[in-house]
Length: 89
Image (cartoon, rainbow, N blue to C red; front, side):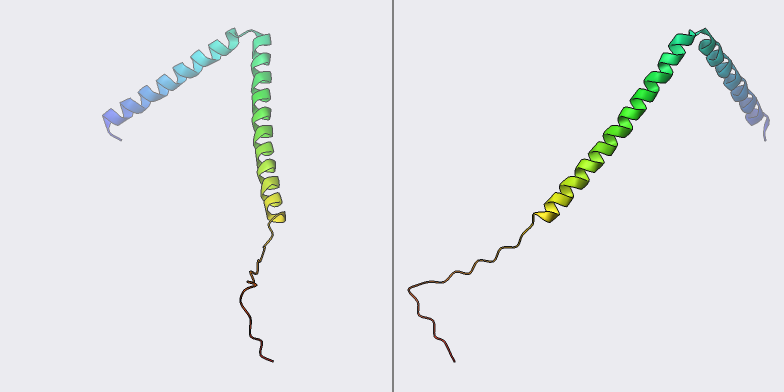
């Protein structure tokens, strides 16, 4: 690597370490009950999302199945009374 690239890599590593240290400090400052609430809310939102998607999938599947069951082919034969039909036979 060149000198400039080496300096950039070191600068990026230093910045990453600083950001990680800042995040660790912020997490340490968050009160324990608030951390628990954050976890519970994340779990609730995740569970609700999964349940909603599963419900939509099941409804779509049920609607498709019902549409297939209720499809019937109808054939209509129209016969006019005023026209005589010649029968061969």
